[in-house]
Image (tube, rainbow, N blue to C red):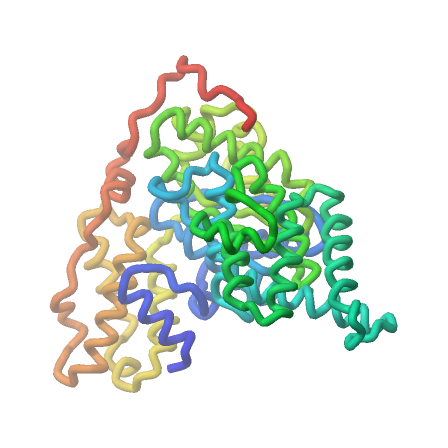
Length: 433
């Protein structure tokens, strides 16, 4: 197997979405994928953009958002995939959001924490531009000319909104690297990525104190975006996955987090070539506990249908649940990728159909909530067929109906997962941070 194929099966064995190689078994997602490609083109053309992926549990929101990251990287974007957590990511704290984006920042050349590589590429392009303009790279003042150009370009690209501390840190990183002080430069790079654990001695090299604040974090992100483009990338894609996690938080935190999303959308036009992609359940979007409780946000992104027709270009992109045929086609694609003669001979289409029926037993024929469990058991079957000559997949031995998470079971039973806010609760107060 290729490295990507092995990665796919290893992740599916654990019941999680692979990080790469998704297009090899992306079945039945042509229309939403085309819309996300349209959004990438909007960002590529220099506009700020956002999209919300809407779907119940098992609809493939994480798969689709991982796929758009893969497609973005293939188009020479930088990208960051952030999962909302009620432990270390409160969305109204923009310093938390910024730190997570920096931790997960990736490019086609660097899988994670890519800012250091991006900075090096930007500085290299600045140096090359100066040399092509006639500067002598061996001249005593060459490094100072590089520093001046870095400052000027960043100020110009952000229209003067780049924080002064950011400029000082970037120039200090360059100067420390030129002096061979890589550890000190690395510490300042960590600070620039939002770390709160950088020693005062390292900060002293850039004449800074404290950490990046929530108030300044989005201006830092603006600066990072411009550096990404100056380094030769098309732009930046930021995925915020599992936004429905906000529903589990206290009412005041929920309200402030939704306000945070609203502020990001209101400012999106200023962040040229940045595409935000949020994923969430219908309950996140449609209840007073979620987006519907904050009128300015709900009015901006509300989901609309015209009879049975849905406009894919509206802010919310609806993902359809899996059906038996789509599960079957995904399984056939994975079987073909497995590269085992025994698997090809023993795992027939009839066997796949029988597995679909077994895994979805007891759920009223609703296969939309079980693709994760189905794929995990299907890969287990493929492994057993390859490893054990006497194993007969037609017996479905050891395979069982899917065990649903509480949220998946609530969806099958048609029950709300959270207690709805009263209609007369007045929603959330619109605040500025």
